[in-house]
Length: 325
Length: 108
Image 1 (tube, rainbow over the protein chains, first blue to last red):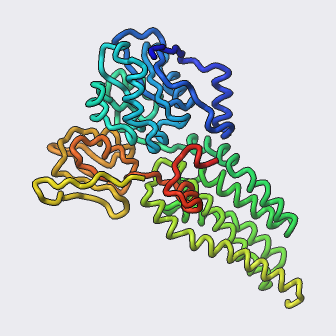
Image 2: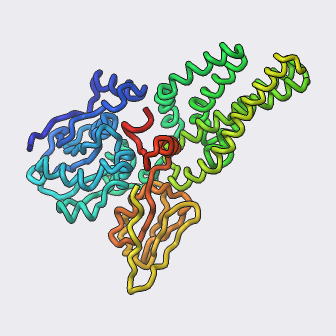
């Protein structure tokens, strides 16, 4: 197979629609481009070869960064997964790269023996192994495709280009996908709670969902403490303050209202903390060892708080119903 | 996920490694050939350049992606690589799988 496909650095309407649906988590596994060798601009036999994944957002990030450049893009078959995740999963791998070089006949297309890989592909690729098996020297370019142009000018990545960041924009863009993933519980739980207990428990569930899914990613670096669970507990506690205030002001300082307030705070904090803990995998910092420790350290406490809170509310209502108080 | 590569004994002596207690990253400076690959691939700048060998300067920042180990031609770095995702671990525990990573089997 030696067909070189062509592409451009311009995104079409169709590409943009594909990006929107990817960002909304629609047809999640189908944002793919065909794997193989692409030419962009008017490349010659000395033109650089950039390697990427066959996730459309990855491919598009690379090609839109190659404006006015003649180059080749070697797209690996990563099953529609981005470079970093695919490298962690070993689909963006030494074997796949070696195979793709063979399948596309890359050696007949260019005279040089150099490949520019995204730095975040490195967890799946062994550069010296690729060189031994194919003769191609692997060069790790910058983390972000937007730095490719500058990198190609100097052939040197700055510390800045080599570092992973997680700015507000990158955190915010995840919110629609997260909302979509939690869609059923977000709709069903408040509805059920409304039918059982009225609008107050319903609002509590809405606060838990919005707090964990929307506010937590946005506020992540501003929440004190280091681990995600305690950050979530703090955010949940803050969100429970209006409920506590309402209960105490509306019902007075009776022991049922105080206990209810405690129960609400416990359950809400635990729920937000749990969603927060589940956000670890979406961030570029957490290690498996750290997350494992966090799970063992915090999940029992979260369960205790959450179910303890529910038990208190049930007990109070049972007591009220049977006229004990 | 597979464990790190086994420690190879050089000259019959156990290698001297540096590490941190909060993750599985281990650096064996005695083996370092100062090629600088770890400096390139690490997304969290755990290593810093040195005169004869690199220095491990921020091991606590390691997220165990495994890039440095895989790209070290001298076997001077060892890390039990994996994905730091609670959702995947909890899902795997509930399903009884060994480990789930990103993709079709997760986040859907």
